[in-house]
Amino acid sequence: MLSKTEVEQAIRRGEIRLTYTSGLENISETEYMTNGVDPGQVDSLAGKAFGQNFSGNRLSLTLGPLVYSHNYKRKWGRKKYKDTPRVFDLRSSKNTVIVQPGESMTVNTAEEVEFDKHIGGLTFPRLTHATAGLVLSASYIDPLWSGLLVLELANLSDSPIELRIGEKIGALHFYRVDNTSLSQNDKDVFQSKSHHFGLTWQGILRDGREPFPFKKRPSPANTLRQVRTWATAHLPTIITGGFVLALFTGTFWLGQTSQDVAEALRASETVPSLEARVEKVEKSQPLAGTITVVIPAGQTTATANQELETGNRKSTILTSLNQGYADVEARANVSSGTEPSRTKISVQLTVPEASLLDRPVPVNFVITGDN
Image (tube, rainbow, N blue to C red; front, side):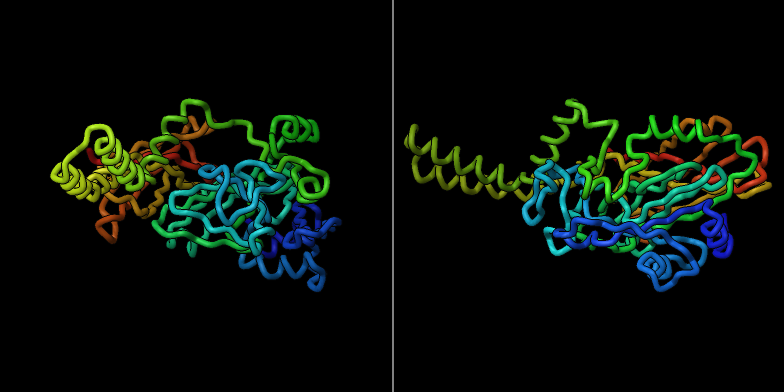
């Protein structure tokens, strides 16, 4: 991991290039001027932004003006960007967005980052947001990367959480990659395969590039799950409406007596118990996430712990590793957290040989619920 001084030196040598774009909070802006960071020019637009967001050895990543919701094609209080479903423009809602409970979003950072072949990066969540229930999926930034950084946010709490354009949502740590054989040809291949490589705010807001060019879209198989999610969220309305419709139809066509009507109304008192059963089922659904474990240089084992709000999902934890980590053996277990509704995750990694550098390994996990 690079120190503060090493990061600044890498910027001066051109190994790291950071760019900020002006006017992202102004929907009437048309120019969107870009400003590269020079640690020596502290009074420039980019210099001031860098000074505010670079602390210690990490760069705080901030929220850009557009977000992609995985839960809502449209939402009251939000305005779609160029009438695109799921893509919302924060500049049309006082530069803010309210992330609803259970909602997940894909966002682009305000910062544009470019690495040469000797620099890589890791993104991490902010503890301030994590303790409030807003989690960010950690990710690795490859050498030769150029463009905006794409992050995934999810509100796991029971309360809405407000975010603003320019608000700090994550942290970027820089790593040096030695003895690399990467070349410009590798960068060209990388650019042809990556769906958001080279994406900039000028390209999106001025030139009309797609802000969230996903390779993978939800399949039709998710339709049943979407219907179940919608039905669960609107269960009281559905049940109440069903009772009213049944009551009206029965009275109109069958001439139910007043005694039958009273019995139908009393039946509506079962709604709270049904809601409780639905809540129990929801809490028992699997909970998935990612925890990054860093194996220190010169060591063959490492352990990381994390505590999550999991309800009663405490029976079993399953882990998996992404492609490229075949030599890593992962073991995980769960235990009680600091509160009855929280669970502590402990992940231990083992590799056959020690590395000369710190080795970050993202571990995917699924916690299954009690039946």
